Length: 134
Image (cartoon, rainbow, N blue to C red; front, top):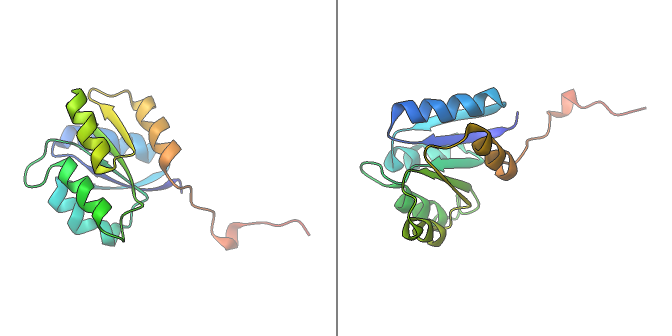
């Protein structure tokens, strides 16, 4: 398995697009509709990486990232912001919140995969599947 990703976006089409691209690359994907939903799921799902939209109802991506960074249990979680907000002030706010990467919509799926692969922790195969030479 390539790793676990929690995809957070209030737009169902974008959420599915991101999820399908990651699943095709071997990632285990769980989705959430906004930041509140994501914060409620993150400790159960235990993702290696979270993708966040900036503009979402209830709890936006910047505030979600800030809360993830403030929690010792999720402080080291990799965060990729994927948003149509592309002003330098948006990028600065994301950087201040501790986001690891920022992609703008519309995004290139290959670029998304490259960023996620670069940040995600690759899980080793279970010991039963590891073969050592005798």
